[in-house]
Length: 97
Image 1 (cartoon, rainbow, N blue to C red):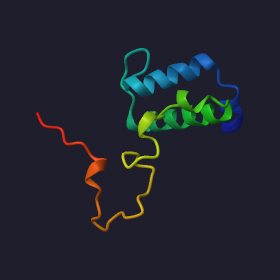
Image 2: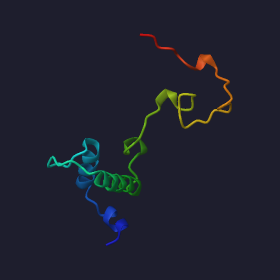
Image 3: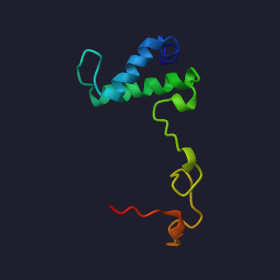
């Protein structure tokens, strides 16, 4: 059986268990995930989500940018003046405690 076939046939309950184990950092029986186990499990979960067309907002690692999407606060947006020191002070809010 290939990796593709394994992920394709992965039971949804096993997928949910893997996802929860990644989130908590431990297996359902309480044993801690090793870094290697976490990496392999995360790869399997991401592959499963892509293969089974899980909606983007339900996928592992999804960040809802909400109203910030497309603004200077969105790290996926490259600013045209990046690195030139030209900063629009109206983009930012100073928080004082």
